[in-house]
Amino acid sequence: MEMEEKICKAIHEKKLLGFYYQGHYRIVEPHIYGISVDDRQLLGYQVAGKSANDKILSWRRFKLSEIHYLKVRSRKFAGARQSGEPKAWERYIAIVE
Image 1 (cartoon, rainbow, N blue to C red):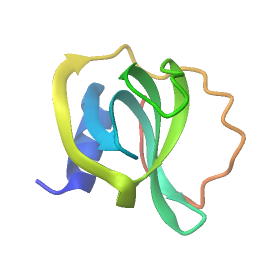
Image 2 (image 1 turned 90 degrees about the vertical axis):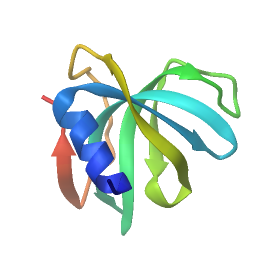
Image 3 (image 1 turned 180 degrees about the horizontal axis):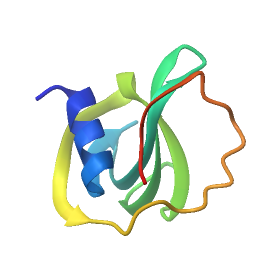
Image 4 (image 1 turned 30 degrees about the vertical axis):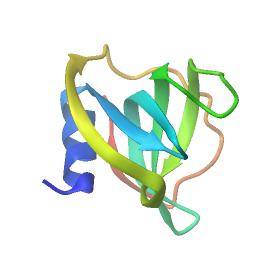
């Protein structure tokens, strides 16, 4: 299964994703997958793992080109969270409900 398919599946089934991004392993609730500023991106709420600034519980945008070893995890999450994400998307591919 391709990375895009895995991301869309995780969003529709409300399953956590695990992956490496910028050298850190992260566990994320995937909320939006789409195109912004000509890049395919994932907006997710990081719930575990590591980050460069040690801030774990937070909203993050991830460029698909920098995501490695992505896996759909078996654990589910409740669904949409209020993000307050002001940045516009050029196109939505999948959104959590």
